[in-house]
Image (cartoon, rainbow, N blue to C red):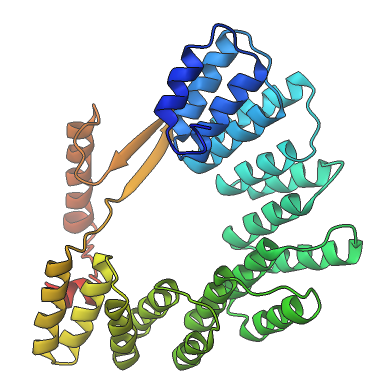
Length: 353
């Protein structure tokens, strides 16, 4: 209850206070951490569980694999894979799907494919995990082929996530006509009502292909309340394609809808600057300041010798921060002085500055 309410610390207090804990108790706590984005804590608790000799269940293994996926912790994921074999779990949902997803998100698409083929049973989550992995690892054609294989097999009916993966594959490969065909198939053959995610994918397909006016017309024809998401996609594409007029239109739509993302105001003010509209530049910056729009700090992580190191922008808490900064300075000096490298700044940041 506490986990599903987002109160993970309260859930942990109850968990720690239990006089006896079985596999279900541990699975619930590990799963609760993962559901609330606390993947490091989930993995740490799983390790403690192992140390105490508690035999895990399927939910525990699937949850800790999801934690490895989010952290892109391939080595830890491989260790969990070994435990799955050791404990005699079968490659069936949910473990098989989670294992395939873990390898995909860690960039090991070949291993993801091996796990997928070895699964004795596949549900729609299994197919979706594999299609998503192929699409996000630059193998969009294989994702589309896998979709056709699923349809020909006839044992699994696609769901809304399946088509999100298909649209994503089409987007990365610039397959506009194919995306429209699949969109019509989803609506007409499978009688699915498009969701916001589907509309966003179609806007992305059109935007990536440079069909910005078509994307604008499509957004304005969407029959559901789509908030800010679709206009954000268009604004980003207008920046990439230097389409200033449409970019200004999309940016003003976002301001009108009350966007609190700093990137909206930064890009729009730079577009007005490029158009020579200084009054609009000052107006947009004034609105940004008045609304207190801020940017969430960037976060990244890397796995080194079995330890995951997390870095947040302007965070100096890492114990090696001085050595890391010194290494970056030396690398930049080498790039600029010895290799003649000079960074090419994006026009947005250049214009705003």
